[in-house]
Length: 206
Image (tube, rainbow, N blue to C red):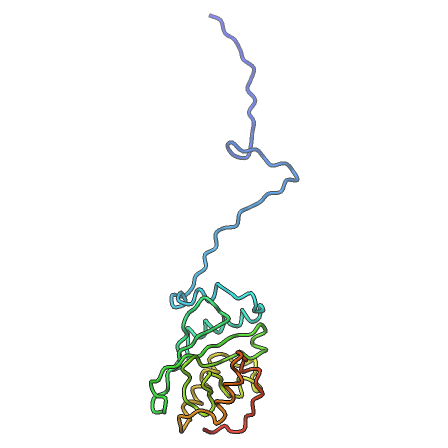
């Protein structure tokens, strides 16, 4: 009986099966863990507005509008309903006349266009056709209301503007157009913005 002795096997130690230790100065890249965004259920309808932002708006304006949109969903002004779209720079808002007024249960639509530097600059707010008959509302939807122009403040919001417009409607004692309606509308046929008009605010009673 013969026996043979084999040389001892060298055991190679590593950092895990099938892996080799990285070189001393190598760059190690770690993939971040997945991130899951959680939105309250009632915000899903407005999700496009929160995601699709207009490139013509400043970062401050985008952040402000997203905040106002969330606050609107939580606590909307009475008599108004935001119609969800995929454009955060233009809001379309349904307005319902207050009970006990000349406009009770009548439905109108407001269009709000936000400038690049909102809220430092006032938004453009008009009524879509047909505009309500009112001494301070022209047939093309332009509104003669000081807070939309000279008296605008960055502290104001879309909700506060809507409340002011509803208050203006509710206090009206007559359904009629401004005395200069035809002349004004004719001068605006080229698509002039109401913000380009030099308004004279001399009567806060209607």
